[in-house]
Length: 320
Image (cartoon, rainbow, N blue to C red; front, side):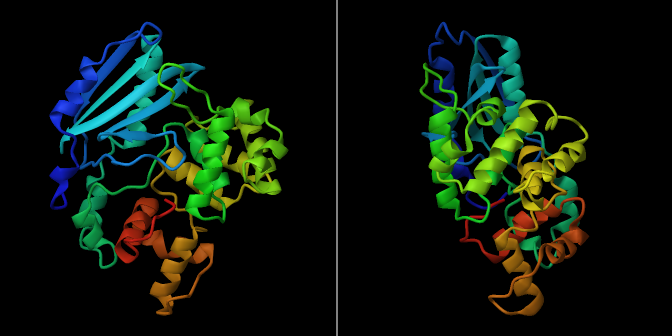
């Protein structure tokens, strides 16, 4: 692990405070897990830009609705090799499903040892791999979140996309009356929205329509984002005007855990590869050249790209 990681861990007293909080009748079932990450992990210590994930005194809080039922999730890291998770819900099945998705989003069960052993001495990313073995692309608990937010993030600044997402969450996100937290809107909610309403949140007309059409595909089951055959849903979504390869690749990487997929249209990656291949600071390359550049890192192209961005542009907030 990188030197100084201990200062990022949550004090044990903060973790135990989770257990001392009284349970409320509406969410009367609590499931707690003390997990040992399979590979070095560092929980983030800041809230998400969309306002859904909150960090309070080092503890992550998130509302995730399961079949319309609210589940309150929390996560804390008292030590390098321990993460404490809990879920409060009205029934155990909802709590356990939400915890499964929470573990996925946090990357607790990822074993990145083969990647580390293969590329820790790589001339481009080796230094980042050795110094930050915990580094990985961000994930969402549900794949539809990754899809919807990728549409919002197309070709605009991260800060502006975050503002759009916060408006969408405030307008259609499911709210837990007990905690005040909101979840990302369900596919059915955005499928029923008028594109003009999404435009009022800041989306362009084309992206608003693309988001509604994508939500309808998911809500109807025609695009099953949880199916083992990811490519089938990708092909269906790609038929929608405004859903291009970058959007589908962001869904794959951030919503389905596909570390082999790289959002090659990302401007940061196009600039990075252009600079490395030509030596010119402002050079940019096309998507196919980005894919070709990262092909030697298969089947971890997306993970390698995250390390490359960290190695070359450590001060830039990456889209992936």
